[in-house]
Length: 319
Ligand SMILES: Cc1ncc(C[n+]2csc(CCOP(=O)(O)OP(=O)(O)O)c2C)c(N)n1
Ligand SMILES: [Mg+2]
Image (cartoon, rainbow, N blue to C red; front, side, top):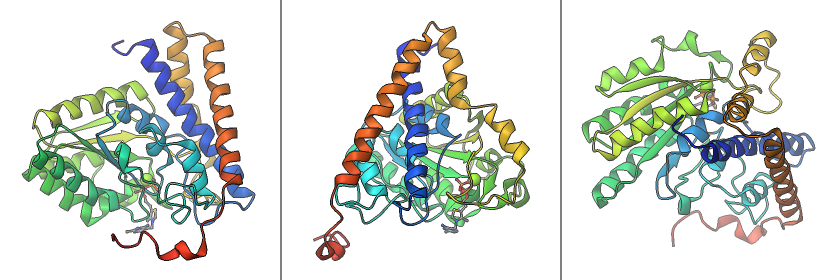
């Protein structure tokens, strides 16, 4: 195992942080404290964490409507995220964006996005800027299976290939795009097959195995930094919850959900850690610390003020 126990423990902590953050978010949503739709990432945590474990603060990510996990994995602050979900002035977008508009450019988070495929158009801009400035920054572009049926996916990959941009395209194939089964709307069997059209390398990886995701993204990041251009990685995974919180999920079978729950990415890493010498006590204390941080984040958000009405037109245009 190339990864040290300490690094694996950090991955475990980040994955659990995403899971517990979203479990709290669902509770807050169900109490009517979160307005607007919310999409959770539960079940997919290994993808964001395995990918971001390869990145430095100055590297970029672009995200999706299901973006809490990407943001936490890249180092986003729980207090500012929770406040944003609750529409408070102390949130990432000053309470005016909500769940799908969390960004932190200071640490390379170029934004969640309510437009399916929106981030796929932003990543080449970030990567081109890095290339023109002569830095070795890379951009990891997260998107779903459904987004690969949008025109922007094809335009973006084509341009990134032609300009040899330092991008890791990371498709999270969670088997559904809203209520559509991915295999009923994709003309190819695997999203990875689409890389051939743009003459870029691709890889399929088990998206519930954080070490496998880490290693695949590591290879792609090295290639990007070596001026080898973009790579397309398809992580096969599954979303445990509905498309949005409150989705009755009539389009899928409960047995399928149960099968995927057996493959819980967090439990899997927990088992690996125990094999690597971690104790149940260590894992328990990580959980307790996260619960405490989340208590503080929720208190912070709940006690924060709402945005002032006068601020409604602020931050729409650059001064
Ligand atoms: C351009 C655009 N088209 C349609 C929608 C409505 N919509 C929101 S999420 C979604 C499904 C996206 O599926 P996928 O890319 O697989 O991501 P997942 O929800 O599975 O994470 C759709 C169609 C949208 N927000 N933007
Ligand atoms: Mg999907």
